[in-house]
Length: 405
Image (tube, rainbow, N blue to C red; front, top):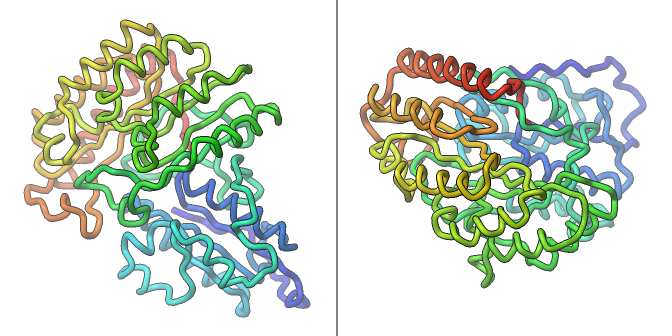
């Protein structure tokens, strides 16, 4: 659970100071938003503080991806309300206000800032330098965040292997927000909406800026990198070509590349990955299940045979190519045979990392209306079995299990 420990009893003589305390429960995409807001505050003379009770303003950046993250976000809001100065303003940000506004309204009735409406901070704070005048923060800085991004959080049902680099050594390139998929379990789409790709020239400008500053690891960030550009007349293949053609000593890491786009652009991607294999770090391809029945119920636009074909082709062309995947355990209707199919998938490719997480209903999603829910006890037993397999795979591949940001 979330624990707020940076508190002080000093409550006097602070009203004229501009001090902001930031709590972030979000993913790497939303932490990049937090860093952007932090740059905005600093440009307007605000101090980012580590003690909540000397803050005049508190931002709580929430997450509603799963039940556990939602619970942590609600806990953070409650603790902030308890520990803050009575005069301090609280702004709740992030995805939870769109994903589960009913639960949020039960504990908080104050100001809300949605992920696609960050410019509204200008109306709330009324500072002279506007957010649109601040360049996006491509580096997540721990000094802005509580808890720090490197801090391990105990989230039941999550098992991960370490593929991380310290956050201040990574340069994030936010290439798009929103996606085109209609996955039956996903509530993030309610918060992030339709695809909005950043202009290609702007991404290249940010990339070259990071190179000039000496960064070596560049992470392409978005809800679905594979959908990049479809709304602006280009595509992810062109994006990767333009980036990888730039000379320099660097590695590209791609976060959340939906499998359907791997299928769509397989031949072009194979050629790019092979040509620039020394510049490719890790590609995150969240497959979610090894069962075709469950993939259909998830509304994922591929079969496990499609996945195996693509991974085999990539592995044949580029031996040792690093793929990171996700698997979801306990989706409604998942039988023992479906679960065993997921275990077989986990062992089918030498993944550099696997994220295992348990299904939880999210408000207003299609999957929440499905019957045949997997009992919690059965789901946790399956997660334990997947965890055991992951440990064996970890040993085989000589990887260390830690936490991922």
